[in-house]
Amino acid sequence: MKRANKGYDMALTTMNVLLVSVLLLGACKKKKDDQPTPVNATYDISSSADGKQASSDSKGTAMVTGTYSQSSKKLTYQVVFTGIEPASIDIHEGKPASIGNKLISLAKNSSNKYTSPVAGEITLTADQEKVFLRSPVTHTLYINVVTTRIAKGEIRGKLLLKRRP
Image (cartoon, rainbow, N blue to C red; front, side, top):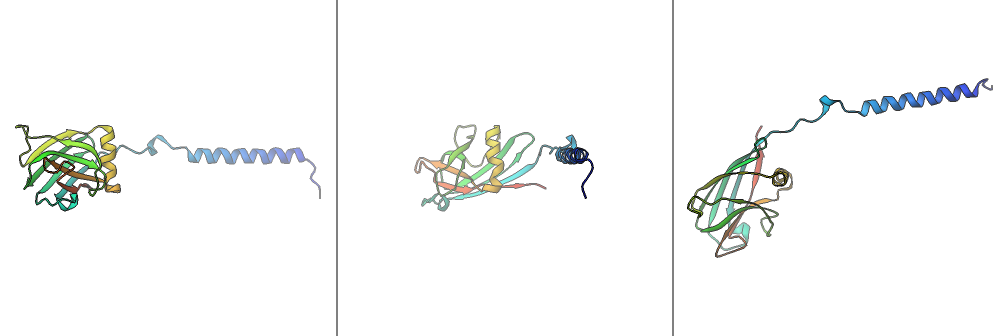
């Protein structure tokens, strides 16, 4: 049986397609309330450094503890070491077995020397924070303690970040 009005059917089909398209687009549009809120987490940091992780024969060791506040961008740290005389203490990006990119240099004590314990606070830049916060996923940050004896780093240790609940 033939339909009497092909133009009417075509208009009805076109209207249905438009209606479905509008509904789909409306469903995909995010409401302002659905936007993610900035995360202001605090992270505990820790590391245990030794010569083995730096592929050196050093008997020196270091323990790093601290926190990172995402809201203030402040990294607070303490490094306790024995058996070495550091020329610099840095956080690098990369695997501890290789020489990675220096991300952050930790400050010397007020005597302009590293004497154990070394403690301080650093405000991270946006780029430093980006690398720092992807570390729990990539596991690519490590502490590197450079000495005059071994310029590439006498002792190293993987830096662990754990987000507080």
